[in-house]
Length: 255
Image (cartoon, rainbow, N blue to C red; front, side):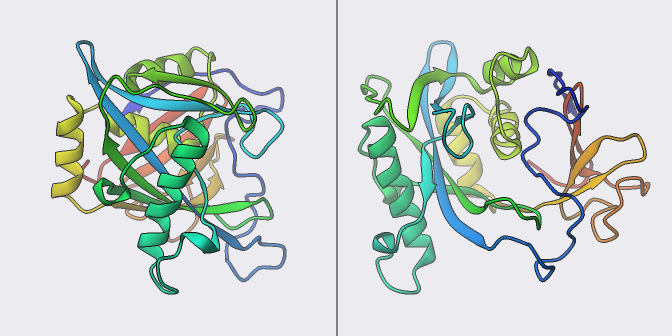
């Protein structure tokens, strides 16, 4: 279990809780937004201080504004090699977005899939996102567009988590969880080897409110997942988005 603190919002909801309405419990309910396919890639490089990841700060006026994210974005029709090749489209989109947002040319063929995220039912814009990882050399120059992307940083995953805990940067839950798991491996080649040897993780998120008042993101394997109930005792696979910080709890999944 890991704990990270952060600054609460005035309403008591964590400021990086991106999930909006927590009442919908089915994709078929009225008002639930359709899923938009998207892709992102975690670029890793080795330094004497350890593995670093490339993070980009979104323009505050666009979707996920002000958040620090990995390069990525929506999958376009032109990204599909063939009509039914979703994996190829996701890889192409992640590579294209990396060049557009960071000025880096990366080979989609070298990407290792590490996760797939589906947000909970709700009215907000919903991106079903493929997460990949790839190793890059440490001397490549970054060129952000100063439009969608305002800043960039190479940073160790554990340092990014510490900055989030101190309220210095904003991270959406999928990014936070990815950084948490990346922080357990070093160097970058070990990160990639781990994901090459293990199946990628699938997160079909369900968000509920616990009796404590905390909002909780549940994933399969958690005892409360099928019942949409954060207070069921038993196995844990969840992110508690408490007003004083994110807290990952896991007793079932191997990472």
